Length: 284
Length: 268
Ligand SMILES: Nc1ncnc2c1ncn2[C@@H]1O[C@H](COP(=O)(O)OP(=O)(O)OP(=O)(O)O)[C@@H](O)[C@H]1O
Ligand SMILES: [Mg+2]
Image (tube, rainbow over the protein chains, first blue to last red):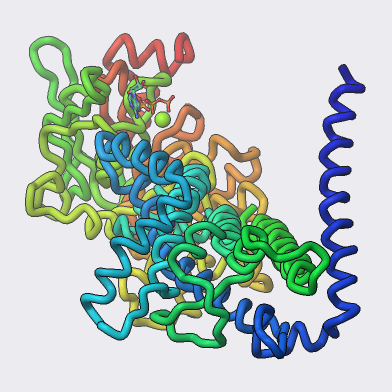
């Protein structure tokens, strides 16, 4: 039994190592042809056209735009739902909201993408005709909604763990429910809340399907959310599903982009770990 | 100062009327949780600037009664209060009464020290701040901590976490936090039960000083403590107020058999 469990753990480690190694080796081949500095600081991403250019900033910018937009929408509303569930919602409402959140979390991401394309974008276009068919805003909105259930449920857990006695101390000093929720409960649950935020950002950052469908595949260095952009993940999806010959430079480029994704995601996870530890020492 | 009239009624019940003015007056107060009734027809007058002890066996409704004085039961699902509690001449359960405002005037100290997980200073200033206190915060912190007999121990580390203090210090911080609001009444629910004897003694001495400025209602399981600090004692049993009177009387010449058994330690 012990051996079996050990084998499982070993499997896990080997797979991780394997993925990192494959990514690395292919990325190294890529960087033999495209200097790392050009990759990181270049502002034009044109792998399919001549002259080829592999400046990753447009992809980073598209990813940034959508991740930020999703965060602006998903994080506060997720926290709000978490607070509402704990301190404001009567039991019957809570018993409706919880399953609804679970359904929301269970919707396949491709459906979100489709929804963005067929519902959100037309709505945006009705407000302003300059909105393109593929645009970052609609992608950011649906990704924000996509991460909301996760943020809400993690915040709900974090907030529920706040000792009742501390909230009562707040009420007993003549604080309103809102004052207690925002000034006592939230700071006390901060480590959990921050962790949920970072996980959500990390998820939005890595989201592929919905953004490919909704934001399109136009690598562009822009901060205008109503234009079409391409994200790091969408680029990988595009190349992987196309008929790019193996061994070509485009083919290798997805490993470089994948490497970048991995590094950033790793950074997020470490940040979450560090912040959770820091806040924990403050609140305990 | 203990004054009032004892009236003997026909059936040997002793009802005691302390002299006015009263800080709080409970009239036919009943509290129930769902279908179970925790406090039954309690009538109690709490004179200003005195310490009133609530004693009685576990589960008799002391905390429930205490928490009905500042409407903390509002936060308990299923809790229902009927009857009247008069504070400053009006019923705090009136439709028009504002419980948030009430809790600014009636402070509370809990059984387990529950400082906010922030600095000592912010623990004191938070309440006044949300209530729009305009005065000098540094002075407020100092006087509150002095009145809570904690200043000398923490004056050098006001920006350190309140949770880094010992249990007894934390409880005095909670008292300081309540004092900082300058309430009329401070309700205390077994404030010393989690503390060692020397911290307990400090808090008891503190209470005796505080009653110059505040009216204090304290729940305690500790009979000696009730005798040492309180002017009046109310003995509750199974939700009813069995006996109320000057502390010496309740302990030395209890009128009810139940009271006699309880204060002599025969059950509890
Ligand atoms: N939140 C609640 N929900 C339901 N019943 C409760 C609740 N709080 C208290 N009760 C019940 O009300 C009765 C009185 O409880 P209360 O806490 O007032 O007693 P107490 O005198 O303070 O006891 P102790 O000395 O153990 O603190 C008990 O029977 C208890 O089970
Ligand atoms: Mg109690």
